[in-house]
Image (tube, rainbow over all chains, first blue to last red; front, side, top):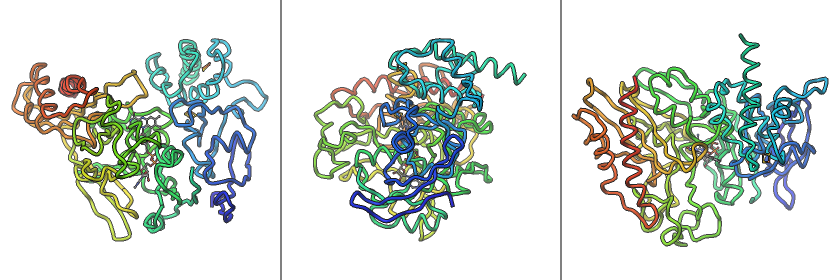
Amino acid sequence: MSGIETMGSEATGPRMRVTLTVNGADHDIQLDPRTTLLDALREHLGLTGTKVGCNHGTCGACTVHIDGRRQLSCLMLAAAAAGSAITTIEGLAGADGAPHPMQAAFVAHDALQCGYCTPGQIMSAVACVAEGHAGSDDEIREYMSGNLCRCAAYPNIVAAVREVAGSTMAEAA
Amino acid sequence: MRPFLYSRATSLEQAMSEAAQSHAAIMAGGTTLVDLMRGDLTGAEHVIDIGHLPGLAKVELDGPVLRFGALARMADVAELPFLKQNYPALVESLQLAASQQIRNAATLGGNLLQRTRCVYFRDGVSDCNKRVPGSGCTALDGEDREMALFGASDRCVATYPGDWGTALAAFDTSIEISSAAGTKTVKFADFHVAYGDDPARESILQPGEIVTAILVQATPAGRHSTYVKVRDRQSYAYAVTSAAVALELDGDRVTAARVSLGGVASKPWRAPAAEAALVGQVLNQAVALEAGRAAFADAKALRHNGFKIDLGARTVARAAMVAKGKH
Ligand SMILES: Cc1cc2nc3c(=O)[nH]c(=O)nc-3n(C[C@H](O)[C@H](O)[C@H](O)COP(=O)(O)OP(=O)(O)OC[C@H]3O[C@@H](n4cnc5c(N)ncnc54)[C@H](O)[C@@H]3O)c2cc1C
Ligand code: FES
Ligand code: FES
């Protein structure tokens, strides 16, 4: 079983217990089934790196990885994520604490202004490269279109993704 | 959000019997359902998560039929080399929909059953016959730029927003539906229903019925097919107009054609008049535009969406020319 247990009801409705595997660690939490993964990460686990933007799937600020695939945590129930490996921006750095190459590239290219969209951009960008969808600027723009940046740091975001994609391809060659 | 119980289905049989109960909702990828529940647009009190059921995500060629498991994810299907080569319209309809994050979660079955993006339906407060039957339709004298030119009624003018369904309408498609009573297949054209008296009803699916597969008859027209989508911005937006065209050609002459329209109708909309205008013709720009015009000949425009008649005709024309150029 994947760590889900229904616990009966309270005045607010049913409750359940789920085990979420976040950044390699298991967390047992009790929650209302209405809780999204986004809210579970932020409100139950204190992992506030994942941002709430639109809460409707339209902005990408809440992007996390589910079993290595980028998905929107605002459109996913926490209970549905039980049993999967969840990675958030807090889990991206290496074991020694060194920033992930994509994080370093965002800094180097000044790929942000206010920074609110940035965790979502970086999670999306890491997956974009891993999927092999960062072969050209146009392809990067298309496959990063699910992440809006209100500050319009787009040119620098594309440059950061391109740099990491380039060095990944060089390694693969 | 109204409180609900979550359960994860461990077998199709269990999901079908739970889904037959009142106030139950099936969840696959959840990318539509979670948002609908947030706006209290479903009345669901029990969510049955079928997203983890094994065996329902396969895509395979089964004799003369392409069989798409209902739980196949949009992003995965969009990458299949066989499909890219032989059915570009299907792949393009997936690639041009939503965002990669959404496509990673969203399933082919769920995509068919997404609900309209009509603001008056989604806002949860306006009069809307879809949300509260009998309350009226605010769009009828409201902002109607996004509304339908085909298949609407005096009770509802909302558009069907999906791209995959629109592309499927250009093929000989049927839907496999499973329930405790057994498995049946229905023609795709009969799966969604145009709005009559009851716009709250959008498909023939009954409680306890689960879409298990989408079946597309293999056709050589798949190779000469494309999906063209016109949007208000270049990416990550619903269709203002879209068209799928699939052709069989003898040199430059069209011997068979299928045309469907998106962004302009209450359901995935086939355009037989455009097909008739193409068949037998040597396909060039003028013939393509004539077919586009034929597609929209009996469109019913509202106050702010009349521009879609010309735009839609040109979308069909472009799709016909692109389809011709594919090989
Ligand atoms: C911001 C945004 C932009 C989008 N843009 C586009 C776009 O451009 N083009 C486009 O086509 N789509 C677009 N979508 C819609 C998206 O593609 C759908 O939400 C998605 O395909 C639904 O699939 P799902 O598996 O997540 O469905 P779910 O949310 O799990 O389910 C959707 C509905 O179908 C029912 N259901 C699901 N699976 C089954 C089944 N097997 N049998 C019976 N009933 C079932 C559910 O009960 C529910 O009512 C967009 C969505 C968002 C949020
Ligand atoms: S908060 Fe999830 S997409 Fe905007
Ligand atoms: S940096 Fe401000 S929203 Fe992107």
